[in-house]
Image (cartoon, rainbow, N blue to C red):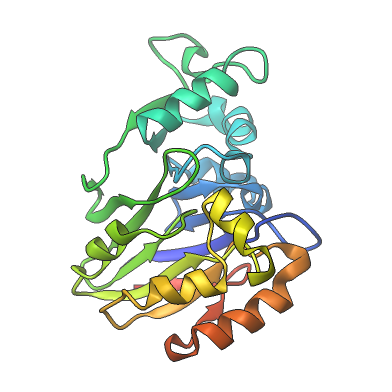
Length: 255
């Protein structure tokens, strides 16, 4: 069985709102937004792996602080799993000795506290019986979603995405699907912005959910803090047949 704890699921920050991050069991992060900062020091030390959906700041913000805080207290390096393009962005723009030290060279290149591990869409990473498979996403930078499979059940996280037929082709093949976490970053008032930024709004969400052929509990993530009420009202209007729920901080999934 897997246990996924929601550390952050907001499209911005405000009181009690944190950006995207999930803790899988005790040792794996799926994205590393500002919610990671709520973990205790012992919890931070337990994290061995980070699976990133993409390189945007709201999904990676806490990685530099995490590795700086507990890197020297670890017996093995922290591994970041991501698309090659995402890893290249981290190397060029974050761990570059200008924004932050390159912890892949600390304490030295032969014994670093941080390592990068490239992933490919559709290729499963198995960690102690837990299967984590990158899924297609359609965003303004190279991106993925994730299929988390315990064997008993599966959860899909769309990551940041817009209209994406390839995602549904993959999801509809999952026999043990139980949960789907899918983004809706804008209200319908900002439909054109959603299209430009390659996110979803409620009308686009309804079009996407119409492609789902598996029963699943639907949870909405990445809402803008100032637009939560209006966006969820529209979500319930446009996608009522799927009974979507708003994902909230600290929500726990067991599957």
